[in-house]
Image 1 (cartoon, rainbow, N blue to C red):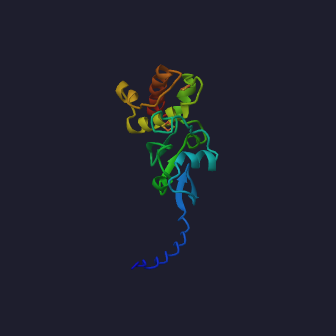
Image 2: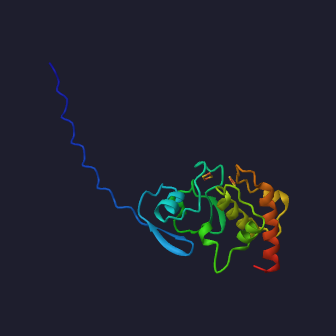
Image 3: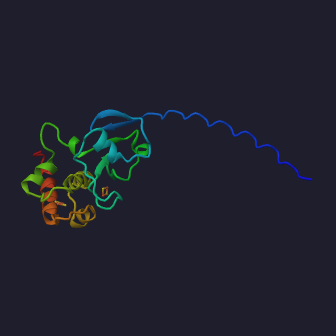
Length: 174
Ligand code: FES
Ligand code: FES
């Protein structure tokens, strides 16, 4: 005798998707909300949503530093930071450095004529700003530890510019 299987239980209707909770974030002193994918990297939000294109996309894997921004004053790779982690924090990009005058690091960068192609330079400047906030008179090891890459090899000029920015900041000229 053939036994009939029980009829399959009706699969439950899929639960309706809850709308995403907007994520608040402060960028260069202005409040924003992100109501899209919380896994989206901060770099996309900066460049594609806000058109803050000073922060660059290089490797996309946290290795080159072209996307360096400050999160609550500390360096972070915007290509690796999901919006869910960046939310509720204060972000500073290269566009947010300048007030009425250039930031001393920007001033020193100009004086030392650091940039070559320029692609890595926003990230280099942001990393230098964070270093000088932490260590007003950094040593060679501190500068070397920044780790941002420059394919044009501007490292000697970066070192000189950081030393010059340190002077400007400590003398209060800027
Ligand atoms: S683009 Fe983010 S570290 Fe290279
Ligand atoms: S100035 Fe060209 S990559 Fe750094």
